[in-house]
Length: 338
Image 1 (cartoon, rainbow, N blue to C red):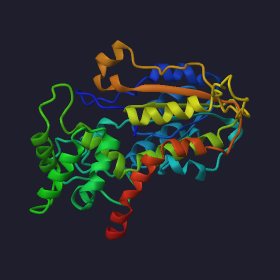
Image 2 (cartoon, helix red, strand yellow):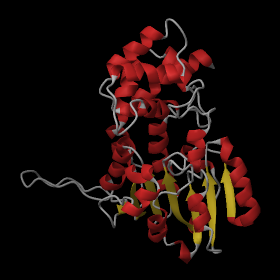
Image 3 (cartoon, helix red, strand yellow):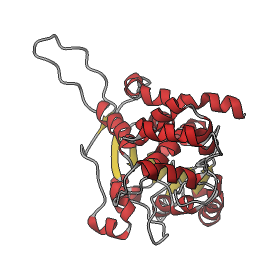
């Protein structure tokens, strides 16, 4: 799930120069690229012969790209076809680990692949599975209860017309199985034309998040990555929508500062700080990069240096517990189809 797309169908690793400047790979060490994709970040880091990359990606279609990297870089590159929530399954020398990188976007190859069904221009069945999934978007749209569809659309897509669209879907699917263009037409019948983004953007985002369990993947991936990262190591995350960014922002900010104590109440025991942040605000693409690759305009890069160990992330799970619960609505689909 690396980088974003662009109208020229070329691959551009987003905020590449900024990321390289932050992680300082010229000093040498091992970096984990949790979202290998087309390998943009990994390739740049491996330009320094002192560096090693451990790459992960749940998408089996990137294995061929990873094999090419292995042929070129040898023992300096290892690839695992895993979700990044499974990062703790990798055996590695933690002492040499310098940084862990997440790029939560999708590549041009993934968007343009008709079998994946990520694009609202696709003529195929709904799919959106990126690997190791329990169900597809087809099963979600055609089988999930309309009240549950409403929650998925509202909270994962932040779609104002969620209830109307969910009810339209429930009525339409009584006649026939809803495919990609059927869904797009249903959405267009509810929403006025939007000249900034496609009418279906928010609904497709919601379905993609739900199908791939992206909330729990992100939360668990951040926590497990933190635990294997040695003190002094850096975590970098590039997000592309407000839901992802809220999670990542909370993760870094909440564990890098003490809450303000009230002068009217006794001071509570201060929690252990886990990160040192050198940038409180996210790093965003330059005008030049946006002109070259317009979809990068929504990217935000946040990072932090680990300064303490901890196993206590209850606040993170509690903060986004409602989103994690919505992902669990797919359990009945899983029971029915598998």
